[in-house]
Length: 321
Image (cartoon, rainbow, N blue to C red; front, side, top):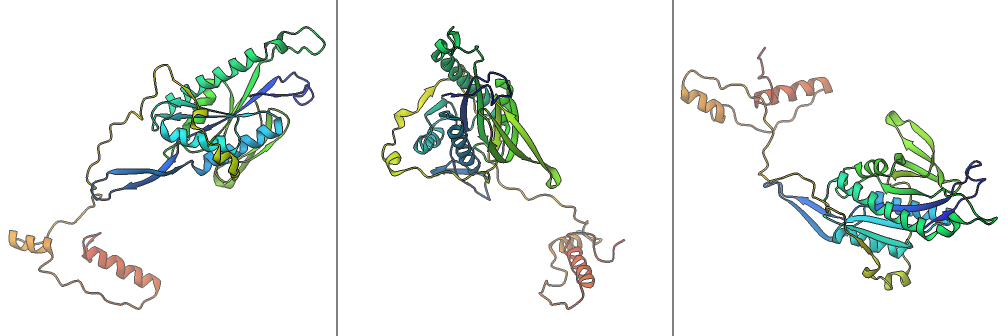
């Protein structure tokens, strides 16, 4: 669970132990939307972790190897969360913990539950190292505790939100560096990262534990699991944590409704009698729409297109002021 840091690596301060954790969103299935009814269908048969989560898992494994610290994988959800944790165990994480709840829970309670699980890991690690913390011999060191370094992907289970890492940093009282495009390990518990900014700018940061970072999918490619690890897949190896109040869903009462095209402004019908106005609305009194080819320069072609669209009611009528 923890790697030892030297006094020199931490700039003259006793850095203590570093715990590496990776937070994975539940697996993402194939989502389809019925165009007429708006119904959303999720096919979970081919569900897998997102590219951002795969990159986060690989980054965490590399940090753990560099700092000599085993990696713990955590995910909040149900069956889809267990799926990504099994994949994480196959590629080499030391522990896999699932916080029980809904796969589509809202980011705020998910982060709070994950923070509670991480705090439990840190407390257990502190108890396991009590002798080293309280020793009085020449090898004794002060009680500096265990610092946590959390890696996550930039997307959640819906491939849209990136709020869980920010909430998690808040609950852990840790520094945060989100939306990273490069991560390079440095001394134990620290690394150098590059963050994407607007207008093509980049920001280079030095991040030191305790910290929470999130990475884009292009940062790293997840290693393949070995055949022996795949054959030894054991779902019972995943530890289960029950949050105190459970994890609620997204909190939105979404009712599918038929698709409705957006409204547009249409000029009123022409005619003095009701019959003339009906004919104008239905287009039976006007010329038939036939395909025609126009050879013109770009400016004349654009004017012809706008004029035709106006005649069809998609803009000001031709000849109107």
